[in-house]
Image (cartoon, rainbow, N blue to C red; front, side):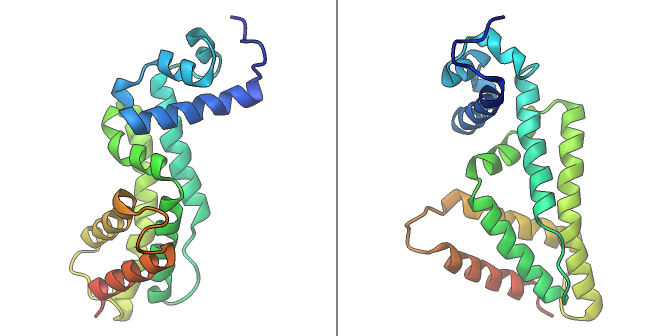
Length: 193
């Protein structure tokens, strides 16, 4: 297959991923066709297969890369569990507010992953959750936190923090720093001994 004139592999590949991200977030994975992605990129539909085997691979790669990037950008810092928990909360909010389309896809399109791809993403998600759960366990052991069920608290905190993406808008009533501070205060109080 011939490339469209002016098309270059090093620029077209990322454009394919960006177009897929935008369209999946706007319309949902199931409603988007390879032809729509090709049109958004400005190539013929057949040319997409030079960059990806299929639409499922695009979805999986977007989710996998998102989770791997998230995991590589946050390691549990040294310090007391309370400091670690604050660092987690603030980082989670910042990271996710900068990537609303990826976050939407990572949560809403899990159902569209084939089983083997779902298993990979679930493993990566569990690694991230385990970091928070470890902080909560250390806080519980030190007497700093009172958490009835560490796994449930982990899922509740992540859900609450990720929920910021559904309502926050730049230039709105609250600045990002205000949102971080308020959410951190709520999380702190929810686990306090």
